[in-house]
Amino acid sequence: MHTEVLWIAPTCALLLGYLLGSIPFGVLLTRFAGAGDLRTIGSGNIGATNVLRTGRKGLAAATLLLDLLKGAAAVWLADWLFPGDGMVAAAAAFVGHCYPIWLRFKGGKGVATMMGIVLALHWPMGLVYAAVWLGLLATVRISSVAGMAAAVSAPVGGALFGRFDLVMLVLALAAIVLWKHRENIERLANGTEPRIGGSRDTEGGTGDDVDANALPGG
Image (cartoon, rainbow, N blue to C red; front, side, top):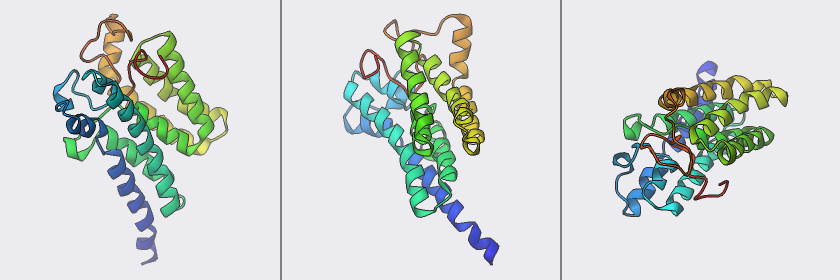
């Protein structure tokens, strides 16, 4: 009986994280604003970059912020309701964003949600993540490169800050971000990945960050 009780809190944290993470804010906001079904626009991705292709900069900014906040909220709520299970909720929220059951498991690429998670788990790591992401958006001006580099910076930052308890988790999340960007990686190898502010390819964004010319950071 005691062993069964031990599973209750982690299971609840997992469900909480997944349900929060799987809220498709980009799809909901564009639909409520009358901008159509985001999944039929541009790349079909549910993140802020694709929302920006509707021409609604405010909606894109709101999507970015809400995708970030849902990752952070999953960690904070789980730690409050189920102390010690914040990491379980973090992993579940990220998976929920990338593979939401409501959208037949076709979700975003996780960059913004991962930033929220990392900030909530250890804010200095989150600051490194944000600095790498925004810095590369402003300099290299390739959205996918900025997103992937930011994700990879998380486990590196975790090791540098001595948070080895978090390294394996954020390393796994970074691996999923890279996997979700596999088509972007192919275009980078072929030299066809578009730059921010240049001609836009329907598949060119990370799915989670936004045009640096339209929102803060650009």
